[in-house]
Amino acid sequence: MIRKFLTIALLCFAGMAWAADLTDRHVNETLGFSITKPAGWHWMTAQQNLENLKRAGVGSEEFQKLVVQHASAPLVIMTQHEEPYDGLNASFKANIRAFGSLPTRDPMQLLSMILPTIQQQMTDSRIVVPVEAVEVDGLAAAHVMIEYTLQSPEGGSFPTTSEMWIVPVGDYFFMLGAGYSQGDAEAKEAVYAALQSVDLPAPDA
Image 1 (spheres, rainbow, N blue to C red):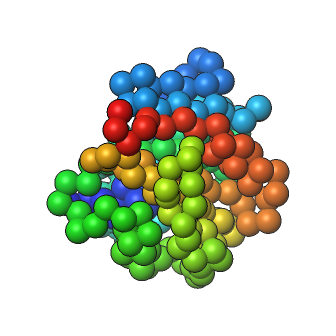
Image 2: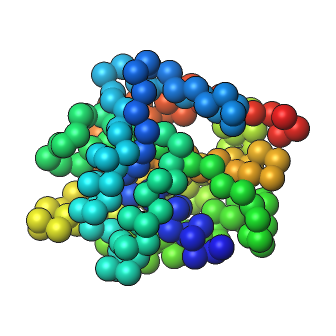
């Protein structure tokens, strides 16, 4: 359970994922989740997600195989540019997971627990904003920001900023992840606009 969770968490940081829609707002009525993509951004399809994961170049070969194996995990992903795109494509994604046998339901503890393993899979990683308590859609959450160098199999090198939010809701928790080029203020602004648009179910829903 812990190993699979760490893999899915890395997917949130890596900047790749899932789901296409025809409107600007994605709504999952079953989960009570919805989000609006920023103007000019694009929904990513499952096939595009799979191709991106295969060439992501994050972590060891074994870890990359696990990433591809769990490629169907995200609820939704949006990207700044249409795929295929040469370069680092800013993205925002959402996952949901059951707590199951995880040792804690506290978002701060959970994010702190997985952070060292995530950093081990990244090149030149450093924590820019340590794990902190925040709110997402009025719910208690945890957030962290990391900078690292994303290496592509073709030899490209991309200074990257990644952020993650963990939001518990009852027996489940949402993982929201974003990745963009270091210093890209426009992409960061779009990411936070998407975050502000998120609607989550009430804990007792």
